[in-house]
Image (cartoon, rainbow, N blue to C red; front, side, top):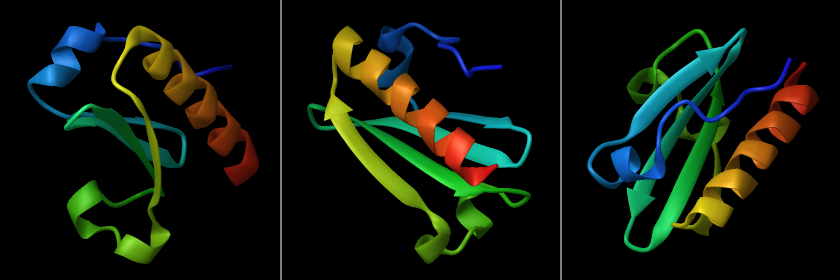
Length: 81
């Protein structure tokens, strides 16, 4: 099973989106003109996960960048299993 887009890109302009799937947690956030994906292991939340366990990936803040971020998220998910 693959992780899919659940929110429109416009939602990410205003606030970060946090999600999880099995033992992987992730956060999408707009930073300037970039969409930043952070992937980190569970079970703890973003604020309580050590920084060295987080992986960050940047993409253009566009629909194409959002698609690329979803592809990367699924790649990392497969690697972490």
